[in-house]
Length: 428
Ligand SMILES: CC(=O)N[C@H]1[C@@H](OP(=O)(O)OP(=O)(O)OC[C@H]2O[C@@H](n3ccc(=O)[nH]c3=O)[C@H](O)[C@@H]2O)O[C@H](CO)[C@@H](O)[C@@H]1O
Ligand SMILES: C=C(OP(=O)(O)O)C(=O)O
Image (cartoon, rainbow, N blue to C red):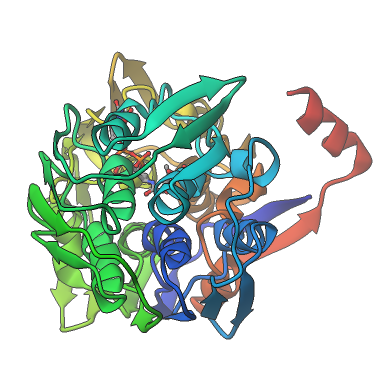
């Protein structure tokens, strides 16, 4: 296990290229289960969630080649192997194995997912969808058992707008009999990306990216080639980092429309931003104005950028209020930022940030993926050395992080945890 060290307080410049989207990748890879011949996905990020899903597909009999960001999955020899424990617990998106295996085999046994601890993360809407399609779903000792004689299209209204439930129901429905209509569907770009792959595989899907998705089931899906969309959350992280410590940073391979809410907030703070077709240039602000943010479903401000943005707000003049309406307890990074001299208090679903303060390097722990991103940004801002443990969370979602930051001129490196530190991590 590693820790990250950052010698902060220095300006960054240059160009950074954004990788393929984690939250697409983790759905596209399970979607390949539904095909009867090889599927190739180009532009995948090199992150541990992708590696875990690769080995889960291998566990169920798939043949998977992954090199140079390109994965080819031959699903023809897959079987509906039960996966009640093990790697499924290490990531959130293992829940997509439920929809994909149910769609293809009409049965699946999948352990309840892991992923970032952001407070309660129920999957009742996924289950509601599977049941509506005709599956029986039971929870036995922490694993979900799904079985159906046949899947039949249905009208499903999501009580909560959920990215995972929308995609999972789509995966189960593409090979069901007849029409499925998902109402109050999530509209995130990753949903369109998954629908595009499934359509290229022969599925009939209309309306992905709106709140009503219509799926007409087909008997078979075939192999194809697909290029993943860029990661808007990774791109957003570099935009925030560029605003915080950049003296001119160009972010390449980005879809600016996916980040309109963030770009608007950065401009409101006084950060100069120029958008081009697939690039965004972040200039240097002289002073930062305090702003309030409220996380919302897409196209609102993404909850996954709330934690990184909070680090930038420590530099703003005045009081900023950060409210997370998606995950009201997504504030585990705040105590760590306080160790670095941030002046933030949490009240209910909001963090109140007073600034500007001078952050100082400290030993801190990433409790989840975006808490890690927030601490990296804080470490780059802070005077002195910041040491971040919990790097395994960061590795779930940031491809080649150290190399990309070094490319911008940052002094950041990995060190192995000592035996003592490993012991402390286990006990925590
Ligand atoms: C792998 C992946 O794509 N992860 C993303 C996905 O997570 P994930 O798909 O798990 O998040 P959802 O969109 O499902 O969750 C949104 C909200 O709905 C609630 N909910 C969700 C499902 C359900 O059955 N019941 C229920 O009550 C959740 O607790 C949360 O408050 O979207 C989140 C919200 O944009 C992001 O933070 C995650 O990065
Ligand atoms: C919460 C996140 O991921 P996951 O849903 O995979 O835990 C995230 O990407 O910020």
